[in-house]
Length: 134
Image (cartoon, rainbow, N blue to C red):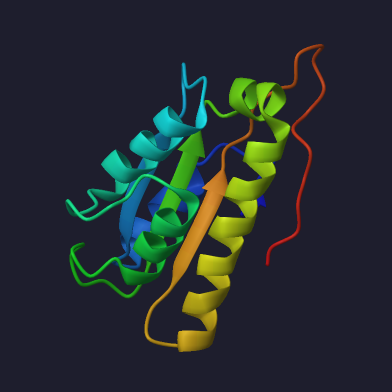
């Protein structure tokens, strides 16, 4: 997962121009893991088998067969800061799950998945930290 210091608009525009499917995961108001996973499931339009746990999210991110055929998929995560600050261990686990799925798609060579975490200022005014791409 990339913590991107820019607004997601240009990434979305480039992805759409390239024919990618674009999805947005809005985490505004999320306070716990169950709601976090529901938001991801809703954004990905997961099938009924989605189990609502980390493994199920990882499986869904690797499958994505229910989404329209596209050369790639871009997921933009917004309004994430309060969740990341309140539940840093769960946020770290989410990053690991997402990064593993992005890496799987890169190695598979049959499409692409990229996830961008939109810029959001820290409480106190600092910019969002940056993480390297997997």
